Image (tube, rainbow, N blue to C red):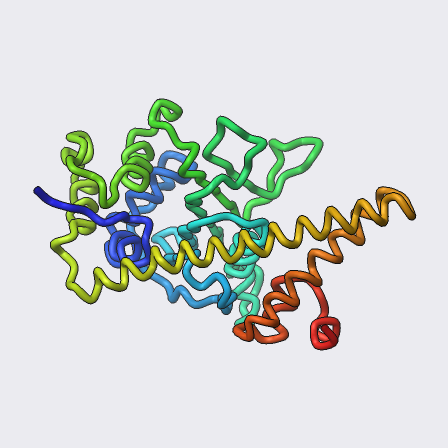
Length: 301
């Protein structure tokens, strides 16, 4: 009986979507709201290196970048867990890709459409309980039908996905089922996946027998690091929120509720910065980026 690896891991995700153009093309055409006649017909991979990653989150994000026959850019990210700064990261990467031609000295006519697809293996928008597909584009607040073309960001929350919630996008359902249902516990692949040429190929790529012992060790290490990273980040947030709430209550009694919340947030930033500084892994500039404090403030802690 064949055994399989989880396609969400760094190794498997890149083998499926970072090495197989036809599979990435099929996935993007399935999940993006592309109008008839504007589907991706061919694509080429781009270098994934655009901005330096925060070393404290080096394992949590995997991405693939490409351009297509219409000169559009696509960024596909696999985010293993969610924090608010990931939202800002997705927006930054999308806008960075959009304006990059200008950095090279090209004119505005060289700007091209950019799509960012963030696949999230976590709950990112708890207030939208029954929605897993989130599309963001620049739009007029009073007249949302009036949009500015340039870039779009799509967030897919895998834990919220249910096949019955998508009725008219068969390929989207198959690809999201591939990402949510296939793992080390999978004993039998659904027939509808094996009947589709793209999904059948993707399933073959994540079969355990296709990997060396060294690759399997790297795969296992990835999941160990994800658990450690998630635990570490949640610990920082719990500590920061607890101290922030306590400080906020004290300041609220003394100077009013609004100022208390401000001071509480300040305490959270300082507490997180002190914890990161004590670890001795990140530079002062990286801690500043992660916490919102200035480098001078961190140096004095």
